[in-house]
Image (cartoon, rainbow, N blue to C red; front, side, top):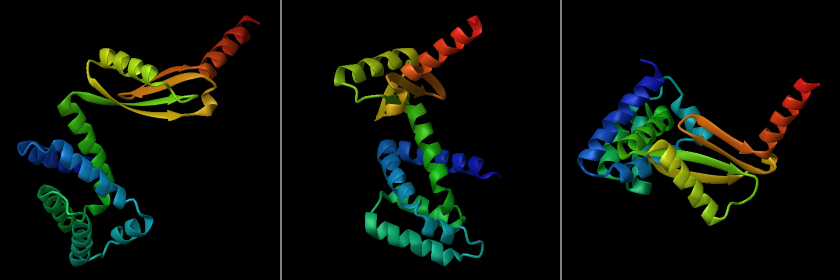
Length: 180
């Protein structure tokens, strides 16, 4: 089974367990923190070793659990991943889990890039507009990108809404070039 398919199945199973206990958000937050831990390049090299014994993977999980004391569901889940040689997939599992959780909660994540820092009213206006457009609660992440020159670019559900000055100038240049 391809790794992304497996990641989705593991995420679905974890979300089901988490929702049974009303801990979907808590488990998601802890899973995100743990996935961040596994982005360490040295750890990734170790986990990629084909002959890595289960006992070593279990030791890695034990050390992680001792440091962070995660929810019981997360701890057991990590042990299952270690037993099944899936610890290296934790990033993909986390991404799938967050996506499934967002869908279950009727929310969507939006990435908003602007040329300058937006004021609170502007941020709220964008959130409200995209909430109405998607009919879902919007979880925004805001960042500045000086290359945009002005305006904003919003990415929601795989769509890009580009209202940047850079794009508008490019369109104007294309129109002028066609007229000549």
